[in-house]
Image (tube, rainbow, N blue to C red; front, side, top):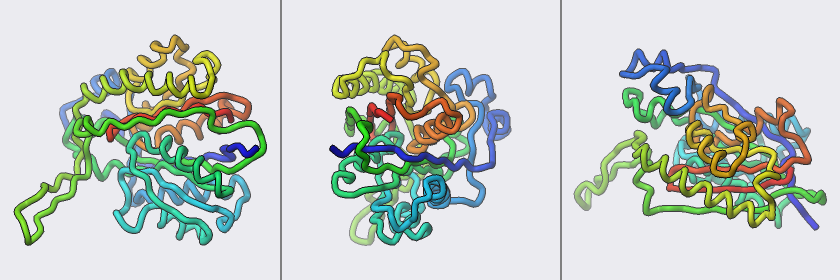
Length: 322
């Protein structure tokens, strides 16, 4: 019987740090106000890179770690809400940059649930293919109004991903729950295109920046994420106590703490890094995973939960035996 294995992880974080103190010189805010509400002290932003540059570095690191040739990759999925362009896809740019000429490549848009949704698609593809790369990559700094303290304090840039392949080992994705709430999508929007074609009046206005109803998004996350996670645990036939670590999307420390309490789990099973990285949307779970693997905290033999939530509005929960 074929199963699935995460054989490697990698991350790429821009070197330019923007602290809360630096933001306080640009808008009416301060470190205490931001950190007490979000858990964020700083974030990293690009200086010269775009989304595909970060994603390409991740792909190169995955190949280097595993000694895998680019030609042996069957597919590349990049989950992003901040692509270089609508066409070519960010994944196609990565495919060309690393010389994966046997791979097909495409982008997936599910915002902060992007890596989980990407892994779900990849597991289906691996019934027919052998090896793929799934990356969450974001340059959210180009979607931020840097004078709006309700959004500018939240987001950062970064990328992370995994190489995944078929294996005969009894490991892999044990259960998942994916949910979308499109009727609530207006509570978190970004990157709206304008359209005033010559055959009609203005159809929509141009507004590239983030806008969110913070209270509604918070309530959504604390209500819907636990339900999706509970469903994934049941499908995997795993008790909450049996999960070694819960890797949640790194949006807000209060949300993570609330979910840990809801499941009666110690907070140290819910590692957090938004304090130094901010909210990196589709990249956040992968960045956290790679940090923990590099530190030897996460290792083979464990049961791990991946939980994404955000724009769409979307939720994705998976239970993995690694």
